[in-house]
Length: 181
Image 1 (spheres, rainbow, N blue to C red):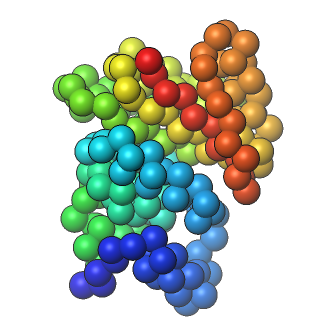
Image 2 (image 1 turned 90 degrees about the horizontal axis):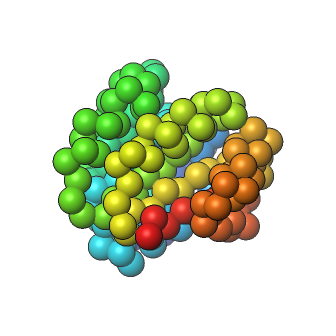
């Protein structure tokens, strides 16, 4: 089993997989570090992810110390398998909006929710509205691809117009964070 304990070890592991298998379409290292730091700094123990794909972002969150529940509509082989991080990641196959409510309903401590699934306006809206009724003080919602997908950017702009305190973080693909107060 591959032991990954630091961000540098995770980056090296990811680069090797990208070269060996041609994996593409995952968050930047900077965005991964943002997820890791939010989890580590706030001592968040559980994270929920919409759109796991190969598991790169889930690995970053697990490295931060969270147990990660991930949802995707297909079961691609996850890069966490065969590493110590895989012990902290549980994959769910199916739509995020239909599956996330039940476990979120039982959370009493702050969680991090990472939304990086369907990049249509309606898809981002559906995924956010699936978690909105369950948000508690201290929860963090992170949206990815706010620069690289215009529909995601438009939804974030609309949330701001409605008064949601969403802040933008300038990253390669674009990141927006909502800290629920």
